[in-house]
Length: 383
Ligand SMILES: *Cc1c(COP(=O)(O)O)cnc(C)c1O
Image (cartoon, rainbow, N blue to C red; front, side, top):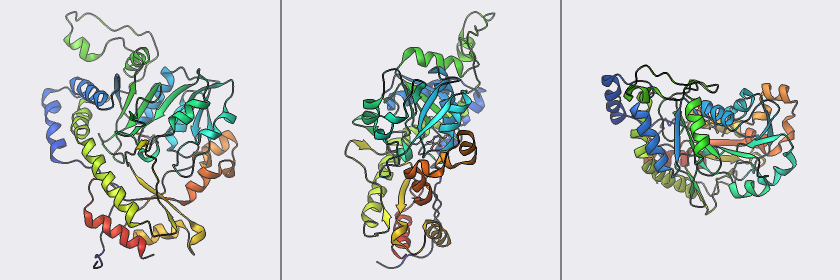
C-alpha cells in the first residue's frame, strides 16, 4: 500500500452536529431549560436501552457518584474499595462522603480491578465497592461478587461503559447502582452530564429526591399539579445535581446513535488489533467472549523492555506525526493528594503503577475516516 501523507488525528472528538443543534431548539423556544420533560424522556430511553428500571439524570458522573454513594449510606468512618488505576473522580467522591478510599490493584490485561486482591482489603468498615468499567470494558463482576460479603454495596463506575455488557447483562444493571458520564471524551455526550441507574425502587427514589435539593416533588410535577399552594417536603439533605432539558435534548439524539457508534468503534478496534498484531513492543487489548466492549478508548501497553526508548518518547514521536495519544488514565494512589492523605507509596500497587507509566490510548472515535486508522497503523509500524 502507498504511504499516506501526514494527517492530524485528535485523540477524541465528540460526534455531534446538525441534529443535536436542531434538538436544542425545542427547549429554548418552550422555556423549559432546567430539569423538565426532556430529562424525563432521556431517562426513560436510557433506562430502556440499558434494560434497567430506573435512570436519573445528573450534572456529571462525578456528582452522580457522590449522589449514589450518599444514597447507599456511605459516610464518615466507612471504607470504599476502588481500583488504583481510574479517573480521580472515583476516589474524590468517596472523600466527599467523609469515607476513606481503599485501593485494590488492577489486572494488567484488562486495566480493571483484580478480584483476587479484594479479599485482603475487606474490613469491618467496608461499606461499598466501586468497580470501574475502564475504557468501556466491564469489570469481572462475578469474580468481584464471589469474594464480597452480602452487606457490601456495589456501585458501578460506568462512566465509560454506555452500551457495554457482561455475560449478556448491560452495564448499569450489574450492582446496586451505576453511574455513566456524558463528558465529550465518552462515547455519547451532553457537554457535561451523567446518568445514575438502579433496579432498586427505594434507592432510586432517594436519589431522585436528593439530586433535586431533597424536594419531595419535582418542579415538573408542581407545574402540572392542580394545587399551586403546595410546596415540597424536605425530609433529607439534598443537592442540586439536576441535568438541564438542553442537555437532555442533545442526549436523546446521542443515545439514539449509541448502538451505531459502538458498532463502528468495534469494527475499527478489530482493524487495530489485526493491523498492529505484528508489533512486538505493543500489547493490545484482549477481550473475553463474555464481554461486549463499549470501546470508549483503545488503550495499549508499551512494552518498554523491548524498545530503546520509553512510552513518552513514542508518544512525542506520534504527536509530531499528527497522531495524538494519551496515557490510559492515572494511578490515583500516585497523585500527590492521595499519596499524602493516605500515606501510600507508588510501588504499593505495582500493576496500577505500571499502567500509569506504560499505557497509551491511540485515537478511536466516531469522527475518524478509514484513512485515519490506516495512518495510525502506518505510523506505529514505522517505529
Ligand atoms: C470520565 C470519568 C469520570 C468522570 O466523569 P464526569 O462526567 O466528567 O464527572 C469518572 N470515572 C471514570 C472512570 C471516568 O472515565
